[in-house]
Image (tube, rainbow, N blue to C red; front, top):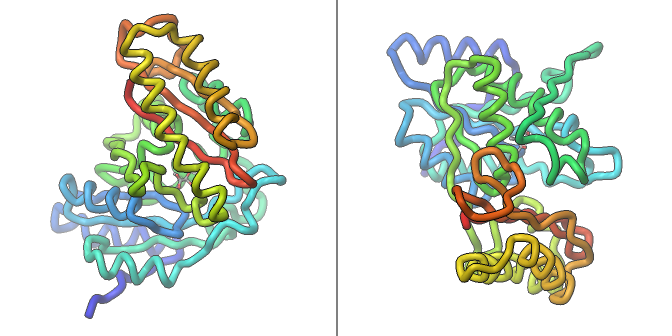
Length: 283
Ligand code: PAF
């Protein structure tokens, strides 16, 4: 029988436990999550164990990164099931699951704004999103002071924003990205896939198929702007309700590109039914 990892809920307890673990020179890894864990999260955790001795997983649905009209209230909260999954996979040493009051005590007044890779794409539709992510991730990183923190490439822009923030603040830790884990039809795994109806789910599976065919067109020499426009049309034609963006960008800075003279990434956000999906791929 597997034993679920211990759950700590306060920053003081987390620091205390990590300090004790460090006395044996253990390298600490942190995987920040919002819970509702799926195979994508488990792969982040498995990957980080190649780099560290002790793995801490944080589970916190962060209100600061949701706009008032978004899904904060209905976002799945499954702490006990998550702890069991982590127990079964056996790679997590400690879970940090703070309350909202622990992370944002009354009077909390700090904002963190990252420019650079945070400008455009997600920010155009979700203007407060990256400042909400930046404040919670910096708070988690400062509390745990890991040697390595691991983020999924599904949220590719988020990964670049966190990397930039950590570099700019001079935090002494490595931020690693782990490849997207996909369902059998290629749909990127996401906790929000649970919102999809059966009809939505069929349409959702087209997102990665369309991105792959756009990459093939780019490799055959099609112009970036043509591919971006035909990709948006293709998503609407297969049944997506709206497309927030479909863009080919510099893979390191997310700056717009006019030609493929450097590593590029194609990124998209589109809504099917009431569910907003993200995906991205190396070009
Ligand atoms: O990617 C997520 O799940 C969240 O944005 C993160 C990084 C855990 C911050 O709340």
